Image 1: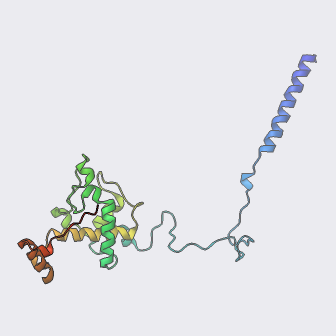
Image 2 (image 1 turned 90 degrees about the vertical axis):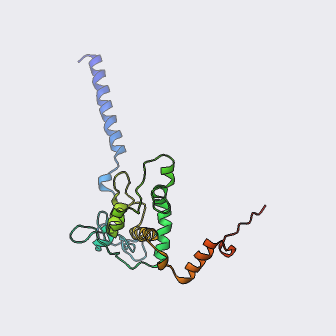
Image 3 (image 1 turned 120 degrees about the vertical axis):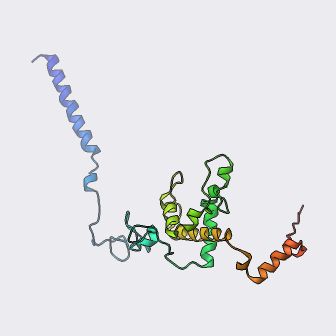
Length: 212
């Protein structure tokens, strides 16, 4: 074998050996990483268990709570239901108003007529909550739209909690009632105040002070 061929052979062997050495040195053994088997003991936690208890309210990924109606707004027939899954209190309406003003009013307006600020700035006209179709729509329909979106309206399932969606629906119902009520629906004291305001009584007119 010539000297040149021997030199090439030696260099090739040295290169292969170096490559193998580097490969072994970089091996991370991720396939055999430290881990605990189910129910295995551990010195890490004071109770001696490797597993930690699940936090209250935890729901497995892609698994909804057993209360299907609460999470979908639909009955066994797959259609939106008319009932609310829990009793609505005044505090719930206040919370629904606050969430509505944050997430819904930018498009639908604070009174639900569809004249929110983004619409006033040139975006597509939002639907009024006071059309006959929506006044007759069941509560579950509104919940489903908030959850899954409708048309150009995006879904809000990741932004609004389940209970808050129902509270928004309750507040939408309250807004709709404001467009259908009459003076006969008002408490006597409130009606008297309204009449004084119409007559121009100063007692019902708000005063504004400017502090410099």
